[in-house]
Image (cartoon, rainbow, N blue to C red):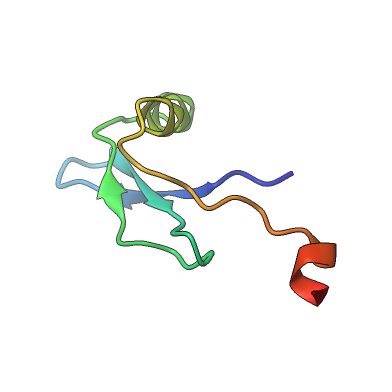
Length: 71
């Protein structure tokens, strides 16, 4: 099972420092606009993303089963 979001980092103006961004997926499975998590480690950023999902700030797409797609 894959995560309902993608995590990647962008550099800041300070050397060797990064901020992690999250891209959630919409109801069609397409990636939405990236959002800054404000976190400097990947683990914190993933935890932040799951908190956003649990608070229902973002509604990730449910995975579509092949049998449903085939119908």
